[in-house]
Length: 138
Ligand code: HEC
Image 1: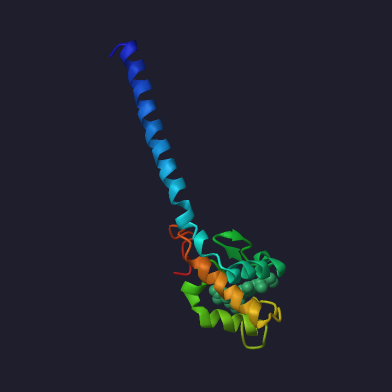
Image 2: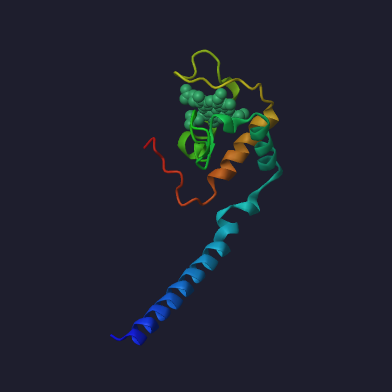
């Protein structure tokens, strides 16, 4: 192979690989609204997110892997624990008998706040994250 054909091969391969990369980027961006589940954000989901922020739940928990690692991931908590369990935690956290070594504070949440948080977690569980974060509890 001489210099000219090596150069042509380099340029050709770069163009082809760049085109494939661009095409895949466009495909990823197009699928984002559906994967992000944005069409299903109800008033309850939005309120649940506000409650989550007002009480700084992220100071101990993660959502989709982001946050603090003191307490369990909550983006997939409905799938892992079920809605009933989540409600009981929010109602009785820090009550004697619940919790092992690490305790969760009692926030005295209203019924509306608890309903909205559950709605928020259900909505978040339907975001297509390609199974991220992995369920390390097995
Ligand atoms: C000070 C740290 C802290 C804060 C702030 C906190 N939590 Fe927790 N939370 C914990 C700990 C620790 C556990 C695990 C307790 C256990 O398993 O014994 C937990 C467990 C949970 C669980 C059950 C998760 C599971 O997989 O079992 C839910 C749901 C939850 N918290 C929701 C919330 C919400 C909603 C907020 C904000 C309103 C919040 N937490 C704020 C520490 C915290």
